[in-house]
Amino acid sequence: MSAPAPTPPVRRPRLALGGLAVAHTMAQAGNTITVFATPFYVRSIGGSNTEVGLAVTAATLPIVLGGPLAGVLVDRIGYRLSSIAADIISGLTVLAIAVLGSTGSLPLWGLLAVLFVSGLFDTPGQTARTVLLPSLARGADVPLERAVGLVTGAERTAMLAAAPLGGVLVMLLGPAQAFFVDAAFFAVSALLVTALVPRATPTHEDDDEQSTEKDGAGYWRQLADGARFVLATPLLRNIALVVLVLNAFDTARLNVLLPLYALEELNGPNGELGNATAAGLISGALAAGALAGAALFSAWGHRLPRRALFVGAFALTGGPLSVAFALGAQTFPLVAVAVGTGLAAGMLNPLIGTLRLELAPPRMLARVQTLMISIAWAGIPVGSFLSGVAADVFDLRLVFAVIGVAYVLVALAPLTGGSWRQLSARRAPPSR
Image (cartoon, rainbow, N blue to C red; front, side, top):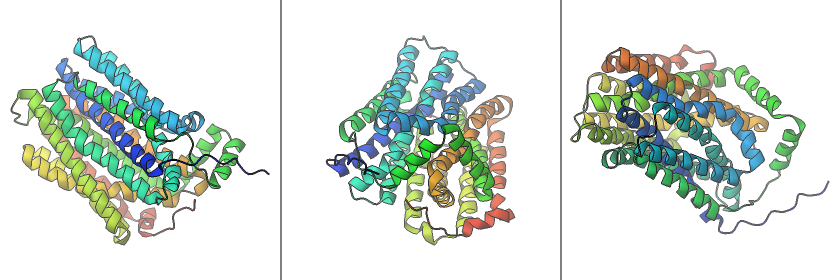
């Protein structure tokens, strides 16, 4: 059996890795602005709270539907090209919102259609940038954990900067015009990957084993094998279900109810558009706290008891901020509580990511990750739509109160025992 042909060495590998991280930041910032500006655009054309929830659902549902298919598409098209193509298509879709919305030619049904198309390409783009990391990290002689941490920090930085920026853009330019800047972020991401990420990156011997498996089984069979493994592993199954429910609550609170709360409850200096800035500050505070939480987990997470951290962090993520909204808090108290909420949430994502890596066998690592993420995201469109309906039917503060109570009750599930006791076990990560 002949050895695989060597691929050309990566020039300036650390620059390529840094460029990928910055490109990821730009793309995530674009996604954040899209989700943030959408409710304000719907309200600007006279949409109801239910229609706000429907629009956010249209932006997030395709991520759930396209998630399981993304791995195959990215493998067939190529990682670098997939990233570039996804950013270009996402940029063109939000540019269409900006152009048509600015001229008053984009009705609600048209917005829903464009958001759905845009969302279909978010997961392939993010997946492509993620799977580029191992080869770029090897070429730059950087530990994979550090490379993953770099990109995770980039995501948090994007949320930290883009949420308040989205509020400022909505206030200064208008809801539709904010999408012009949104399109520019996707364009920068595509240009960075084109210019800095090489066409070919070093391979390693594990790639041959993975390719052999892909050749021996079709896509649907591999997908079914991964699904069966997730469903047959009690701890993975329980984590997926809890995260699904709590993601539904989170998207209800932050993507739908927070903009509505800003419009109805906060005392903005410039009417509705000033309230968009307040909502952006709250979202930015959440991202800042999450960035700090991720850093704390990186430093001390291996020393903390996992089950206690899982329960405590989830309870703190869902309880205090919901109570603050239910009590009618104004901008600056909400910003303070949001920092603490983000701190707790920021420790959860790397913990859950670590558990997914430890529990999945190496031969189906990617499938398990994709399926777990898709299951987790499945609650987001449901939460978006139902929260919009609830806000039209019930008092907004009451909706926040109900979500807060339900959130904490679900977060306490690991205390019931059973397979949840395995949370405390430390496992060796799968060998590469």
